[in-house]
Image 1 (cartoon, rainbow over the protein chains, first blue to last red):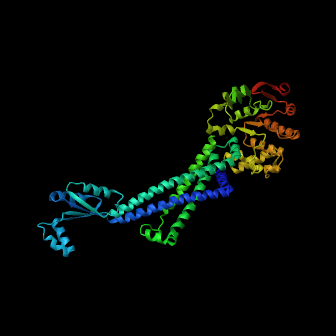
Image 2 (image 1 turned 90 degrees about the vertical axis):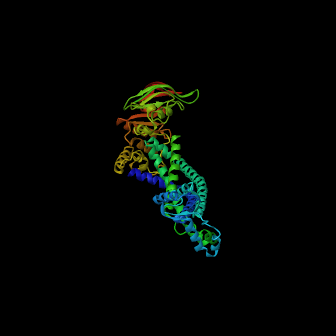
Image 3 (image 1 turned 45 degrees about the horizontal axis):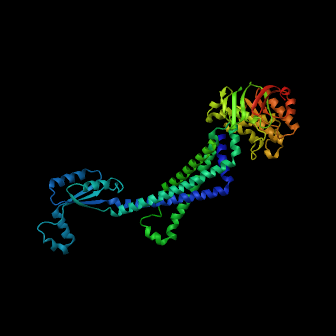
Length: 297
Length: 225
């Protein structure tokens, strides 16, 4: 208890000792994590948006002209057995002609020019909602399309796929920027701990001479680094919350463009948790490396 | 208790801080280590608590070969040795009590045990009345007594002092040496590095002399000087 108490108090004393430097560090760490948080949020929102789009995936597969009925029946059976499929409807060439006539009565006269129905037979497939575009459905559709009896396909996934492509791009840019900024944060904490180690060099020397274990010396600095990272990430969470809440009010034009894609109202708690874990983790790791390097020398 | 076998220590090429030193110190002995400045006294002491490693040779402390003690177990050796420095090495922002308590705090001792031991050793060195003072608010002699109290608070088997009276006047130095005599009377092996002839003559003990890193035979102080 005594050991834990002195360890924690050493860490807190050290943080309060260099107020200005520590405050600046919090600021830089917070800014870094804020950028990470914003990109993470954008990526999360776009994914949600794309998933919404893809909730009711439907595909129509058009058959080639010379396909025999047993081949069609076999495919129908296969589709009905699939766990991904909600419903399957077969439309023969005649049914397609009737549907066209119903939908476009003014163009009915064109059909009289043909002896048989000019439309191909097709299968309409409705997929279950729990399977979104990111998973098995796309590859399933591609597999069906490759069959020799299929001429072409139509899928209502174009928009969702475009949104997913944007999401991927934003995730990549975000990851690249975040990695640079996280490295900057780690570097700052590393040097801050180094500075504090030099400030307490005499104390460390005495501790070592009177028989302190390496971990006894390391732990206060590691806790200090973790606290720096944690407080920085708390600040980042607050800044992220304020930024997302104020964005609609101060950037009305931009807001109107993005409001359908990005919900500025619902910020997922997991995002804050991620920031807190990341900040604390960076602090822990960089301070550990810093103090270990000092003790080795 | 402490044995050196053909120990060499070299910091720079072709220059030896210690040259082929072999010696033996028995349990409970009071030893003076003497020699001019730069003779290798501090180096020899640092080798005992593994602050330095020998360039060649073997050193046994409490029957352990210090070359073979891994870094992560070094603290066990250090807990058996109390060290006193010429510059006291006290933490300026901690009270006398807190400075003395450090060896026990780092061992994770209970508060009540720490209190009991610190109060006892402060009384031993005559500093009970100064326990809440900061080191900067007490005299040099008192600061050295705090350093001695810190060295003995953890019940070490060996106490090492490197020029403990180097910054003190004769009167205070005698006082400090008397404290070391009391410590030794409790069976603690005591090794003091000093080049103060007057004190060596006043306290006739076995004296080991170093001359330019080489060890001269030991004997009573008068014979050595």
